[in-house]
Each structure stands twice: as C-alpha cells, then as structure tokens.
Image 1: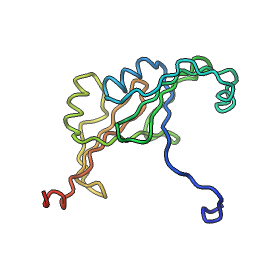
Image 2: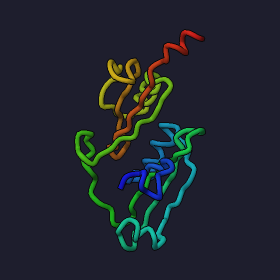
Image 3: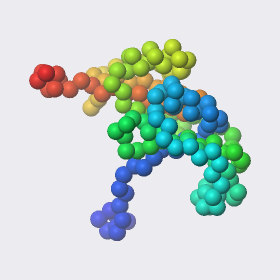
Length: 165
C-alpha cells in the first residue's frame, strides 16, 4: 500500500531501545562517560502487556531511559532481561540486521581524547570524511559495554556560515 492510499502515517522517532547484559554497567557508560541524562528508571517491569509485546510470557525487564541532550525530543532506553535473556548478538556492522546509533558531537577530537582516557574502545582513529554530502566532517565508531556500535559524527563546518562570521 502506498502512503498516498493509507489512512495512517508515522509521526516521529520516539526512542531507541538497546538490550544490555548489565544495566548498571550501561548506566555508568551512557550517563557517567557519555554524559546523557538519566530521565527514568524502572528496575522491575512485569506488566502483562510486556510479555505479549516481546513474546516472552512472564518476562521481567530492568529499564533505564536517557535523554541524549537537553534539546533532543527522542530518548534512548537500555533494557536488561532479568529472565528469558538470550545469548549476546554478533555486533559487526557488516552483519545484516545490525544497526548503529549516530550521535552528533561538536568537537570530535576532544570527545575522543576524553573518552579514550576513560577507557572507551574505538574501532579506529577519527576519520575525516573526504567525499559525499558530509565531506569535511569527522566520524568515528566506538562500542558500548555490550559491543553495540555507536558512531560519533561532527558535521562539516558550513563555509557560508564561516564567511559571514
């Protein structure tokens, strides 16, 4: 069905959810190392609808929600399955079905220096984008404690803004 024929439409992105193996370790990473604001904590979610939604009858979830920055409408949640936990996924970015989260940053080199000093692992050194719509920007992949890929992206400086300053 095409969108023109539909009676519904998507409105926005609400949140990104990541399944984690140790929620306290993830809270430390996202709040204390990356500086995200912890905006909600639900250590024991057992409502019946959650089992229906996830397909795991009697599931218990431990959930923490973050706001990436004060002006960001979307949130991110990390979820630890307290029962029905599965095996860790292979997180390579070249594997179909995997994803990554891209976070905008205003100073990539400083962010990498600070996070490296805190023990965060990166896939490479910062990379300058040399072609395409983001030419002149900088990018790097890093991993959260469960191996989930996070991308930090510093957009290119807009030459028109630079000239008018």
